[in-house]
Image (cartoon, rainbow, N blue to C red; front, side):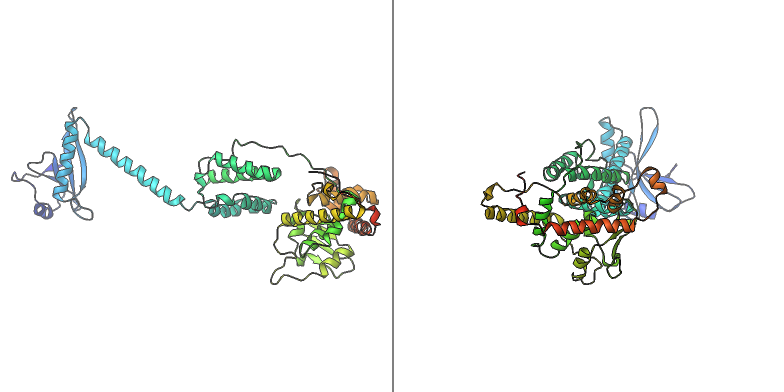
Length: 430
C-alpha cells in the first residue's frame, strides 16, 4: 500500500472527496491524528483506517469505516474512532483484537435476532399442523394422534416450541393422569415423538417429554352383566338425538368408538336384502376394509335419522365423553326409581364404573354364549388374524358375521322384554 506524498497538513473533507482512484491502492495520512489514514481503492471506494505497529514490529491496519458512499463516516467521526484506538493501545488493549471481538459479538447478536424473529411464530398451534402433514397423517393411528395432541396441548397453543420445559410436561402429564391415566400415557408417547420431530427440524433443542415417568397400562376386562345391559337399553331410550342413536349403534354393531362416530352415509347400504356398513381400510385399526352386516334394528335406527345438511357424516360432532356422563346419570336415575318401587333404600344405589369401549368387549364375550364360534367373533370384531390363518384364510365370513350380529341384536331386544322382577339394582361401586 503506497502512502501518498503530500503537504504535511490535516486531512479535509474536500480533499477526501477530490481524491481520485489510481491503478493501485494508496493512503492519505491525517496530520495531527497519528495512525489515521484514508485509503483510496482502484474501484473508487474510500475507507478510514487506523494504522499501528505492535510490539513484535508487525504493522496492523484496523478498518474504522467507509469514507464515501452509504453509511460513510464524517472526518470528525473517523478522528474520534482513531482516538479511541490510540487510547486502547495506551491501556494495553489491541484495537485490532477489540475490533474482531466487536465484529464477532455483532454477528452473534444479529444471528440471535434473526433466529428469534424466525421462531416467534413457531408456536405449538402453528407447528402441530406441519407435524401432522409431515408425519402423523401417514399413520393408521393419525386421527388418534391428532385427537390427543389437539386436546391435551391446547393450553400450550400460544407458546413457542422452544420455550416448553420438562417441568411443563410433567405438570401437564400429572393433570391428565388424574383425569384419565390411559390418556396420559398416550400423551406422553405422542408428545415425545412430536418434540423429537421438532428437534430434528431445529425448532427446539430439548424434548420436554424425555425422562418423564411412564405408567403401565393394565388390560381392561370389564364386561357388562345382562342386568346392566338391560338397564343400559332402558337408559338409551331416554337419550336425545344423536346420543341415543350413537350409543345404540355402538352397542348393536360391536365396532370401535371412533369408527362408529365417524360413520358416513356413503359407507352404508341400507336398501339391499343384506344391508351392510363397509368400513374402509384407512379408517380401520388394522388397515383392512371391514364389512359389518347390519341387523334390522340397526337399519331401522339409521333409516329414521335425518341427514346433516352438506355433510357425509351420519353423526354431527359431539362429545362421546359427555354422552357417557349423561348416560350414567340416566342409568342411575332409572336404577334409583326401581329401588324406590321395590321399597329398597335408593341412596344405596350406584353405578359400577364402565366405559363405552366395554360394550364391544361385552358383545364379544356374550356371542359365544349365544352359539357363535370364536373365529366368527374375531371376524365381527375385525381383529387381525395371526399365524397361518392370517396368510391363508381369505373367506369373508359374511353369512356367519350376519348371523352372529343378528343373534346379538335379538339377545338385546329380548332383555328389555324381561319381567320387571328380573331388573336388579346395579352393584355398588366407585
